[in-house]
Image (cartoon, rainbow, N blue to C red; front, side, top):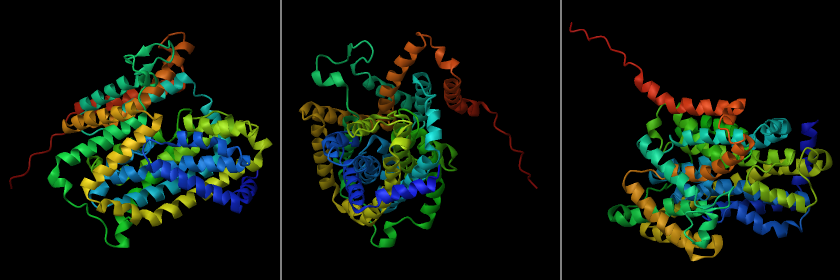
Length: 504
């Protein structure tokens, strides 16, 4: 297959004035979706499905995919500026991005996120074009058993995300898993912890938890610390101060490359995408860092790696869809619905039957990533200027957008009340030294874990040994055990005795 010739054909499709306008619209809407908490790309793409019917199949997928990976970048803006993750994939960015903003480096953090996302998007798009169809076959080996073991490995990685003791992180993971069980059992259909409250039958929404644990609790902390709330956040005065300095660029280069590669391969897996890739990248950077104590206090690598990983993961998740007909996550599932509505069946025959659409979408990803950089980097100064707003006013704005975002999910006040309740819980946890990030990550992974665990047990006839009989599953289980046992082994190592100093 002549990849360069096919890409040239794709650019001929993507570079038409109409498709350029469609890509621009998708990136703008996606960025706005990422910035506004509670909306989310899945809901937005679902709402725009009727509009996609009036577009040709190539333009429709260009629009919807632009919204998806545009939202991955947009979510980092509020994560960095006001510590509210616009997307689940941006939860990790809150940890160090917000601390950089508090130190007056919000512009650098936003620019690093933009450039990292751009580089990752290009890497992922090249990967899709070159090795996507071949690598996607590897994803076929991932059944429920392998996915369960991968998620077990994910839980062990979450242990290292939170600040403070490991016991506190375990407690937060346990609370997150408990909250994930609220709702209707996936297998039996029994209600769990619903208490005859109708909205709880569907469980808690990730946006409700994120806005409550991060946004509302931050407002409460602002209200409590009156002296701090009157202090102005240091903001850049010159254009040069808005961009990363040479040291920050050097610290971000390697994490961006590692995050891009890690995000691409994790995005290929069923259930993958930006969220798992982002916190896996964060843990990788923290493990290999020469200064792991800097993470959580504004480490550049803690922003660069996860932002690159979530963007690469988001775009790589198109490979299982286009090449195998397997939606990697809920958002990709909605895009698959748009393809079917257009009369296109995704799968191995897609490249043969609709080459102009396949390569047109791939080429549009190059165009879309360039649009995102051109669109957002010049606006860094505007975004940073939001930090000049007095914190008393900012807290009111945060509360307003959180309430609007919570109500817009299902148009009921129960979601607003639940968000406020989680805000109070988050405030109490943060005041007592607990980090809420592991809680939120465990909640997201918990739902995926329960579904794949139930399916895996059914396949294995209820035998837990089935998770060790699969070679790929066994590798993940062993890796998880090594991660858990390594700190204990390191503590048991005898401390070398230094020779006595000479008194001469």
